[in-house]
Image 1 (cartoon, rainbow, N blue to C red):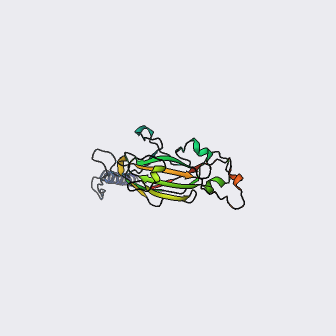
Image 2 (image 1 turned 180 degrees about the vertical axis):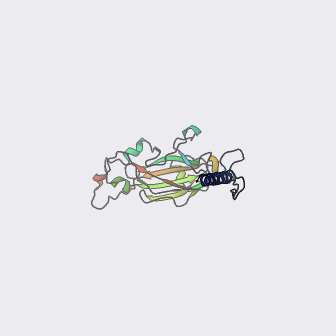
Image 3 (image 1 turned 135 degrees about the vertical axis):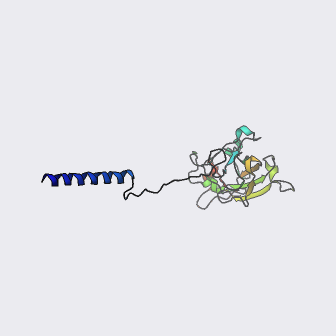
Length: 229
């Protein structure tokens, strides 16, 4: 029995040594795993920063003649920037017309694009005494434009050679621009616009209303310039 116990102990030692050698990679029947490695690259700008991005397209407006640099703003929601037709615009009679200017350009970081005037809609958030848009539906609008400054008054609508181009002419709520205007990138060009709003003469009230229904009303039209790069 003693001899058998010694033999069993010897076999256990040999097994333990063989197993340890396999774990340590010391031969026997051990197999090494393959080495692994990875390499990464990224799109950069040559100085460690991002090398992929998008362009910027941003149009801004100026409603304050003579359109100095300090008065350019972004107004992307209705009602937008305020163009002022003057105090006479609050007391229109049939045959009266009033005028207001605005200028557009891209920002210094923008790519080039086109802008196109859309028909007027009621200005958001402005309190008026014409809740059913009776007055706005009765008004007429004309708009001229040029890429050089001009005086925004009746003379701008003369149609003479070299005069600003007429791009809108008709009922206020349905007349948009007949063509788009191009704006160069990086504020390198300015497009000037003049709006004329008038109360037609002879004045014909809408069906179901009388001339008296239009007296003392106030309205606030808003125009969008739809811009595309």
